[in-house]
Length: 137
Image 1: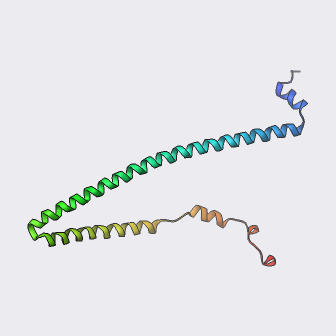
Image 2: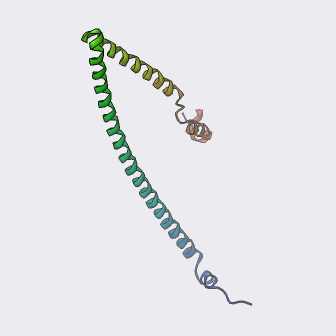
């Protein structure tokens, strides 16, 4: 017969309560470590997202400035052909058309949003035990 392993000797000399307590402590430590890891990952992801959002904001500002100056240049070029007032109206109408198209496309995209279909389906699966019955009202 073989000699018992150290784990077998320890299990033979330790009470069940001590073993359960040790397993509980180990599980608690594991959960704390996993939670710390998740926090660190979320913090890093949020930091990277914030940097990306800042860069996109700067790009949006630069693009808006470019559009402004291009619009002024178009207005000045058209002023040579049809006069300043009419060229301003033409540029404004062009921007109104672009704004209308963007609005229509954006509204269509919003109509496609389904919300949280998986969560809604899961909530419908909650058993009747959690809802009040007529007797207890």
